[in-house]
Length: 387
Ligand SMILES: [Zn+2]
Image (tube, rainbow, N blue to C red):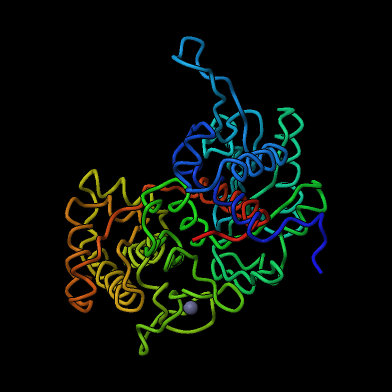
């Protein structure tokens, strides 16, 4: 028999629903929440109390001169509570604070070169988090950590990060939690970008969409039927390591040859341009030379676009999404790059799926992705999504 002290599943789902209504609509009165959620007044009232107690909502008075009986406004805390986002990448890592409304405190963004060892990585990040929390004296509700790799969602261990091998087999959320005493969650980078699009971006009103991040790896996050596609261990939607060059392909970080990730990303383009000119250049340096008219990268760029379009067409065929949001810096290298890639992808995909799919550049960012990761984790702890 269920304990009378344990909230029922339905009550938990209602709490989650109230939070989601305020996440998507912004500042609301209790009456607005009732209208938008279709939940009864007493249930909204209980849900709001639970969210205020958990620090996930804050309440303020309406403006003094408003007409009628003054009511209280409910909103996500911007400065009275914070969450921390940690972005792990092969070249640079970042730590940033944010309000629960997704307002990044960018003046506190700390970006630093990725350390050489895992232990150093954990020490440095834990120190920076504690610094942020202690300096601000604002309660921190948790830490979202993103990594461009395969994360086992059951135990938070990284199976493989093909561009950042120091974290292979490690559990950074567990290690950082033990040093900071904060709730920490590890999320695959592409999943976090997907969550950020759903929580704060263009995906709010869309049930079927895909987020592709092709800056270093070829990361894909999928929302289908309003739910994040997870799979048995949280690895579903992994497209980076399908073989597209079975003959003569480059060695991938996963150990195979000719994976999509080795030919269809900003990092792949950087590799091929550097190889031709015989000099290791970073993406920014290549972009600058192209802008000055001192370097022609047409062959490498066109080849990268062709492979990127293969990945996009595969995603359209397999998941039949309404939207695909893509993060890639190579779209900035020439005016026609994005349109050209879309045209090739749509031409390759099955017509019934591609004709109803909108391909757009993602407006989310990696910091907001890490923040969305912890906010989604805290919301999951409240209860499952009411659909
Ligand atoms: Zn691979």
